Amino acid sequence: MTKPSFQTLLQQLNAWHRRSQRRDGLLWVPRALLAGLMLAVVVATVSRLRPFLDNQQVAYAAVGLGLGGLLVGLVALLARRRSVREQAAFADKQFGLKERAITAVEIHDGALIVPADIAQAQLADTLSAARHIDTPRDLPYRLDRRDWVFLLISVALLILAVYLPNPQENVLKKGRAVEEAIADQIEALENIQEEILENPILSEEQKEELLEPVESALEGLQAGDASQEQAIATLSEAEADLHQLAADNGIDELRQRLQEVGQPLAENSAGQQLGKSLQNGDLLSAATAATQLAANLSQLSPEEQAELAQDLMEAAAALSGVDDELAQQLAETAQALQNGDAAAAQQALRDASGTLRQRAQQNVASQQAQNAAGQLAQGRQSVAQAGQPNQGQTGTQTAQGNQSSQGQQGQGQQGQGQGQGQGQGQGQGQGQGQGQGQGQGQGQGQGQGQGQGQGQGQGELGSGGISKGGGHAESVFVPEFRDLSGEEGVQIELPSECIADPASCGALLSETPTEFGNEGATVPYDQVFGDYRHAASEALVDDYIPLGMKGYIRDYFSSLEP
Image 1 (cartoon, one colour):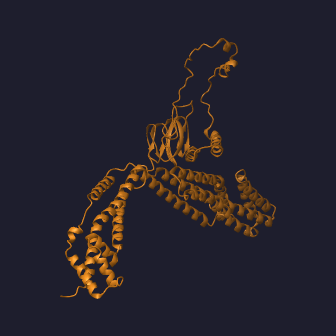
Image 2 (cartoon, rainbow, N blue to C red; image 1 turned 60 degrees about the vertical axis):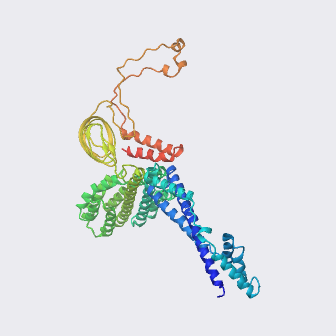
């Protein structure tokens, strides 16, 4: 008879341990999977109560959480390793071995000192008891049906959450669209910032002025918690500041006048280069040409100096009231040439060259501010339209009456006819005219009434009384005009004390009837617009107005700009 081997006992203990792990796996791995799926159900529920995840992301989250729970369960199961003593103790408890297995292990490890024959007998008894154990009966595999029922319920709920429409999905998509639009505007502002910094013509002071509203808008958008309304207000404020900078630095009238005075100078042999530069509107080249002309004055003949002095004097007279500084410098140059003082003429012409260079910088700053304001206007519109069904479309132009027009976002002038283009403004009257929107347009027509707007057009403006209807934008309500001058009033009987002393019953009773005169006399629109705009600007600063509404107010008055 062979001696019993302790290795045989170890193999049996390992077999029981592996079967125990499989049994525990059938119980706990589904529970770990269920935990992940239940967490996914919670995520899906939250996504339907508030904007969190769309259906596709819920599906990805469910798969990820389910696999994550399954992986955690497997790792926890495999990481739980029992020592030989723990395996022996488990076998004694599970199979009723009455501590035979743990005793055999302790004898083998030397924890118990017994004679060799007793050790062999104890090991043989342990192996004999182990052979009589029915392992499938005493250590069966078990499944908890409740776990699998909950698993099926969780899967069904997740399938419904993925395939049924999510009421929060539109809100979620809009929020993401707004975030993307804001991110695009941040990138656009950074590009504008870089363009301003890299512009070699602008002075450092001009760069600081232009960068201030851009950096302020960047700071507001990069805060990370800006809502759609706050982003619109931030962009609108920066846009208004840039428009103001463009207006402050604008020299359109000066450039037009310089182009006019450049013609006689261009016909002058001495001032030909200066005149051509002025005619082309290139003020930087004109400044360089003026410097070159100042250096060549001493080489001119008296006749050439006299002719040049005459042209410069005419230019100074034309610029008077438009740019008095430049006009004075040109006049001093002409006077010095007439007096034969070449040195004084050179100095005055160099001063004029410096002024032209400053005006060129102003013009570049104005154009830079105007371009930046235009980009911010487009960005503000993109943010405002983010998440809307018609996102990406700039709008359609509408008209009142029988008018057909094409353009972007606007409202046509009331009348009959056809117009085409982009424009902005408001009009009252009847006639053929242009559509109204944002930009500029062209129209041609003839009508009666009064109108005001931006754009280019040809036509005749009639005279007459206040005409019916007409408006600037869809958001502005313009009531229909009714002439009540011919209507009879309603007779009411006043108390006797009011008849005796009308002032005691209120100011209205002491007023005299209104006499209707020439109702066609009206105040020109461009004369009163500044007062209204100034009052609105003060209200934006001094009064409490919600942040999201300030941008709309600025846009409204910007669109009414005469």
